[in-house]
Image 1 (cartoon, helix red, strand yellow):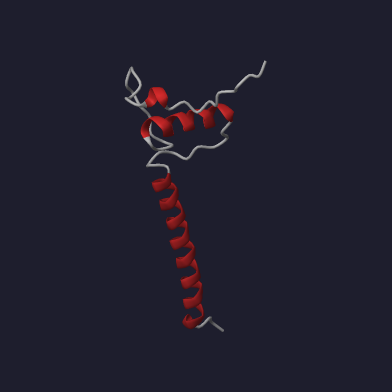
Image 2: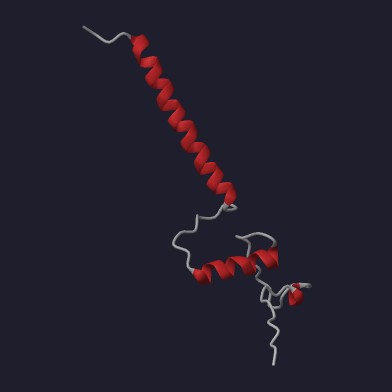
Length: 86
């Protein structure tokens, strides 16, 4: 006894939905990383550099190739000054 073709339609829909969600996830990752490969295994140094890139270029993935810092970066220091009480 063969399988009626009507039983294959739901399986086709399920496979298509898995494909749609997979493509959607990869597109979201691609657009979120500005077309670059996703970062993995980030340590403290990477996070500090990402913060610096954000302050220089405005995006976490952007990098600045100039020799000197852009205008306004000299006052964009993330370190907080500690007041010492003597």
